[in-house]
Image: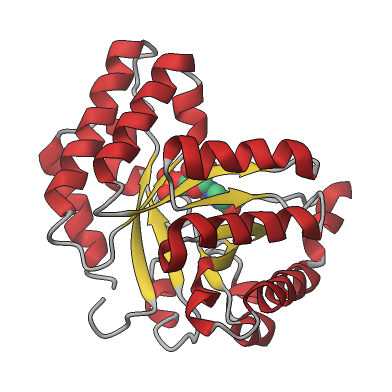
Length: 261
Ligand SMILES: O=c1ccn([C@@H]2O[C@H](COP(=O)(O)O)[C@@H](O)[C@H]2O)c(=O)[nH]1
């Protein structure tokens, strides 16, 4: 990590206990928090990515726990809510209020399906609330995607990159210190996009999920060491295993992964 400041390890918060009850979920969330407490001084880049779906599945009790987690770690960490939100702009504004105002997260993942206006809103709202700490990521090339009729959605990834970088240039008008707040999701197993000239020239920040349990080739991290973009690699199950393993094992997993950075 010290040698490659563009590469950032992100702790993915996906609490998913084997037992399907609120008490087990709460225990799992608190185990994640224990590691976050422990890491808040030792990790060089402190980025976390809570997956909204797991919290939502416990209704209002899950959301209360998410609020607690974000309030507790908001200062030490950059918090990206993995929610993949979008809607028409009036409704999307309410999603953004939830992320940046009610929760106090620093960024969100969003779908580009409804067009440029909502991407602009997400990038602007992030910078307005969190300045340089903001990070919002538009889905571009995901770790799972259609191989059938719907593959057209992602086959135009170059246009997604172009749209995002043009929106960023338009919003920030050369204020380059804010460029890092705007990004795209390009999964770590999407080499054709991750190592493309288009992505490198875009200067967009990259959220690259898909390592850990989804792929065993963690060398992609080292292969990115000369990449010009900021690349954030989230690891969830490979560290926390949904919260189903002892804290000591989580720590060991984290140490193994850190060696790749
Ligand atoms: O393309 C994508 C976009 C998002 N995700 C999310 O990232 C984590 C991955 O968890 P791991 O346990 O590290 O595999 C999860 O929350 C996904 O919803 C993704 O995997 N791929």
